[in-house]
Length: 535
Image (cartoon, rainbow, N blue to C red; front, top):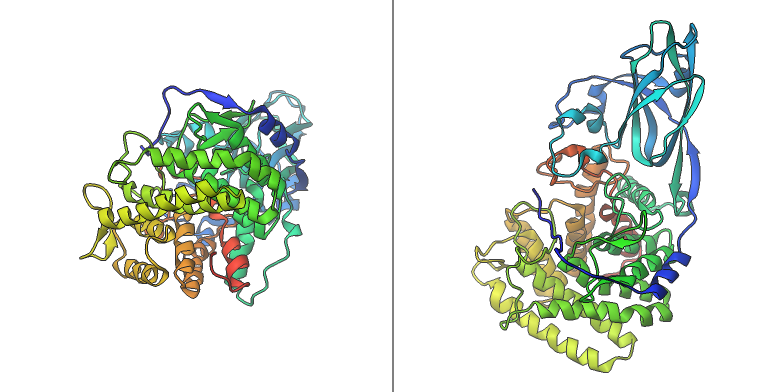
């Protein structure tokens, strides 16, 4: 089971002014009615552990227009392919053929983002996340013809329909199926990236589609599973949004939601629920909270929204102060696995002690820049002292001169995450950072990166180290490989060494449209076309 951090006792302090501002910024969702592109018949009984090949598993394709001509009896099934990933509400128009309907039509529906989910058997699910997230429905239709509007919102490309049973006297006819797709933005409003590289242009479009489908009432982490506003995802989504949709109000809404519901110590929650009412989750992530300062500075420097900066500046500063409060007298973060959770990545066995300190140093830089914009000279001076002190502490405690790498924890673990965050923290000057990232690539630490979230920071570290062309190559290798594997939206977890890894115990609950994976569009549009390096 993966790590979690659930607070036993907490109080929520709501700032009604902030929540009112957030409510006024709630978007009106765009709606688009979309129908399937084709019908598919799949081979069955493939093991989900292996990667299916679409050419191997699809045995027949038909035009969608053939659907209404078919008559379905007991155990008949069909898969509808909508051609691309959709988020929305499904309507079916059903009728009967043959004798008068003398029993309910009993139907099974299964929604899948990827073909692998169609091949998986939900009855065999044994992961630690609730199987309530599995997108399947059992429906009785008492009277035909009928228009069946499913009340739940689904995230899917494929919809499987199976007739569990009808009587011997009649057959089920599926006259029409559609999805009312919803999003706060429209993909067609973003001009295509034209750089003469087909793979990068494809990666950009898939990244934008991923972002669009995660932009709902808030920036959701995944429209299939969790459907929540996570702070770490928000920060990356917002950066991608600034280069594409430029929906500043949705970012502002989310920043105010986090600022408007804090724990009694002033901590911001790792994520928020928006239904049935606004509530912070009882989860605190050390790194996510610290990165609030980064998200706020990014927003301010895009919009110069003075009111938002003035309102939310104390929230950002408080997260840094809380982070500094965890330091020992030696200026390090305790190996805190039993106290709270620093996420960093899903890597198996990853020790995040050193990365925690690096993320604190990184966040201090954003805090200092916020203080400069606020003309808070005392904060600038105080946080600058901390920044230099903690950079020295990072080298003193975690730099291994023999290995020329940073280590973490009592076992002095070497991981990708530790090196990357130390580079982003600018513990060393740029040229030494460049040497470190190139050495890390040569060594290839055993504790790998397994999420697009960590790969985002790897790309960021390469650019920061002056390795922009290598960064582009890595985008092609990582996100490009997902494209080659058939991704029409980018995934929550993608380990090139174990492509169908799951931190939850089963691939069936992995999110195949996930917020933190959308950032290639940010890098390509900000740095590749503009030729800039990170500020």
